[in-house]
Length: 319
Image 1 (tube, rainbow, N blue to C red):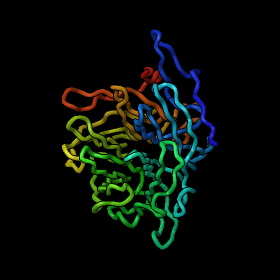
Image 2 (cartoon, one colour; image 1 turned 120 degrees about the vertical axis):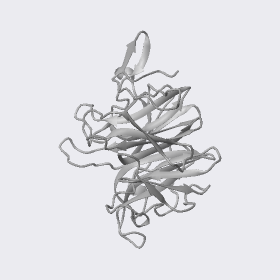
Image 3 (tube, one colour; image 1 turned 90 degrees about the vertical axis):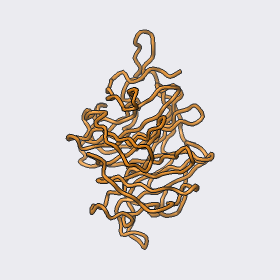
Image 4 (cartoon, rainbow, N blue to C red; image 1 turned 90 degrees about the horizontal axis):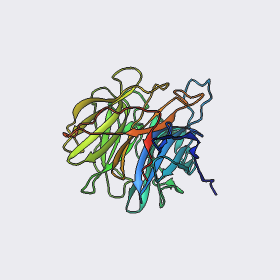
């Protein structure tokens, strides 16, 4: 049985008598690529897991982790219910992933690499696992990859099929977004494990990777890691449809400390909007030893996003 424990208040601060969760919010392991969802009044946070050494010059990411919170300050670690070893076709590391609930089941879309076999010559691929609980156990839902490198040809490099994100619209139509170098998208069938039509691709201004799509009021938002400067920042577009066309609006978060990459995750919980991201500020941290943070997100009256302020204090308890 996986050990589940509560993170302590050792990293909380008290300001004017109110508890804040200090950033980074996860401190006992290195985490990246946050993907939060709200289910049964609980925030479940799905993350990558950096395990590279201090001297490493590349990623080492062997599994995916799950955390949960009911107050945005204290986080329960549910361990690693999924890894590339869970997929018979997979090889390599556990890159960014996104879990979503539909009809009581939880579908976890992951990016890793594909073995050279009769289905693919290798390269980045996207798989999907399924569970009856947000914390697992998860199993491969298809027995094969949902997306392989040969299915997308708009980029020449073999790692463009990464960073999946799923959005279900008000009418029940589900969409899968992903990509490095270009943003790709396709409809999903109701079973959530098959594409329902062709793959499309486009390139929002400065787009690198890490798309995140959601709806607020009548606007659809596409938020992503960008190349506005080096290292990455977060920029966004809006549209009146999840299929676009997308209107570019600009930068909403600047570079993060001590990490070349950044990755957005956005959720509304108990009436407040939260922006998750990662940086490299923990002791011995860096671009390959990252840590997830969360700060508040605010909107202007016209629906545009105000610039996100990165803080050490984090957010107030949501209880």
